[in-house]
Length: 337
Image (cartoon, rainbow, N blue to C red; front, side):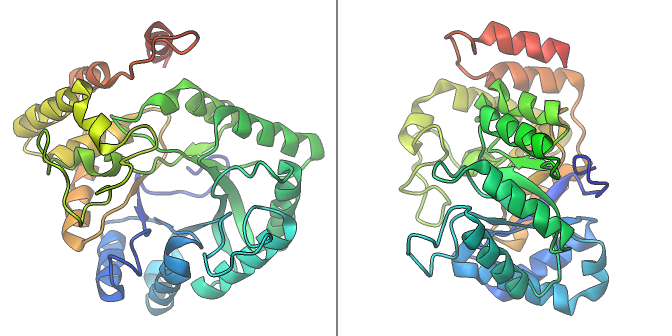
């Protein structure tokens, strides 16, 4: 279930950040067809993805696949605009910006309402109450069915939740954080804040920007087609830093070992680990090609044993040593869960 909304979603969501750029429309249609065929029910996009092209492609697919669209949960985001305008009111989540962003997304998607409308990141210049009031009004107007956040910290989540409760507004339903075997710092507070508020957790980049795809060996710098070639691989470290970290290669070796025993690929095992975490609701797949999506969907039938989950959990534990987020605290939380 998607938080307390009553919406049911599949354990894997389809991310569409590449649609309209590295994934052309024909391929995107085949991917959405395959995703729906496999039982997927959550498509995630954003107004900023490729100047709105991603939303337009998803909208055309929804219009041409009425049966599949009926049970699909549609999610989009606002905060950065489409990138077409660069004025002082073209981003953030002031009421004017959110009003224009929501109407633009509804138009590009060709729908009357968006099931899950998300603030793409924290806006330090605008009181969160302004955004929450707008989102509550949008729900009352029937333009959105629920709302959530993406890339919020723990204190930002909790502040927003209690601000909504204080005013009697609708509360957030979900949070999209970066989370994978190589990016577990999310567990320090974000997961607890979401759990305390009854929010769904929808991890993005579950393959750590490609590191857990199994395509690379040590010192094998990614080619120009890679998602993280020549730029930051994730929010924590660059390619060079991740390559130097022995934890990266310990985790990959264990993924390969488990995959060999279970007849699964490295990314399938990595995705199965993320989906198995008790805090996770639906894992966002960011495949660029139909072949990648097919492989990723293979994780849906893979259930790791307690021994396998424990081994991966120990090897991937983040190197947090300072108070109050040191390893003992994380191990205590793991035992409580």
